[in-house]
Image (tube, rainbow, N blue to C red; front, side):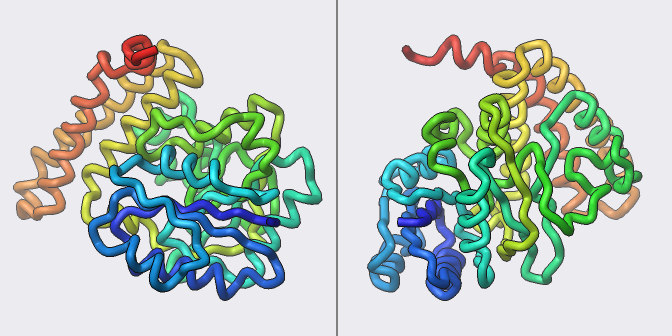
Length: 320
């Protein structure tokens, strides 16, 4: 088998159906194995896959394992020389899978390769990034990345200073679509299941970096991404989950002092923004999105100050 694609689904039946159809339609001459881990969906996803796509290997979990654990189950069952993480709310475009697979076959020093990812409207989604740092956290809290997106210093995290128009090595790639060399997966190990959702991709790419493997962005392969198919109705919970995962990454990868500092930076920024909307929200008309905005900022600040949730403490408390 040339390529094994692992997809984790949760209550996104129609989007997953479109994703699987696109793989069928655009695999070309490539032998593709598709494995779906369903995280206890309640919308009929399991029945849909069994009825419409009997060739897909389905792992039906009785509980929501999260993205990392669900992906690991799929990869453990895979037989391909190249593995691929793919979101259920994506659709592959012609030639994308072949391009990613052939690149990894021809470049043994590359551990992972990611495609150009576009929204349904054709707009570029920023899916290749620089590893998070304290400096880039400060830039984000001050809003400098939005004020000066063309600056290499301020636009570094999302690489907004660059046109995303040619292949290049990058720090990390979005888990919405990453092709992986099996050898690299086996050497570096599976995704860290301590991440329920978010940051498992940056964590795994950071481990690839530490192991000496390259990570490449390949705009010659294109995937369409609806984005947040499983979380579309819970934006506030997505924000909280993303911050919790980011704190874990800093503590695990850089150490406790870095995690404490990033928590303080996030708390400060959240309190400033939350206070602003608390004061000016009523002036601007008590719009529901503004009320939600300052409530979310205060929740982020509270989360940041939960020092009992630091990575070191949670790891020390974990059963051996």
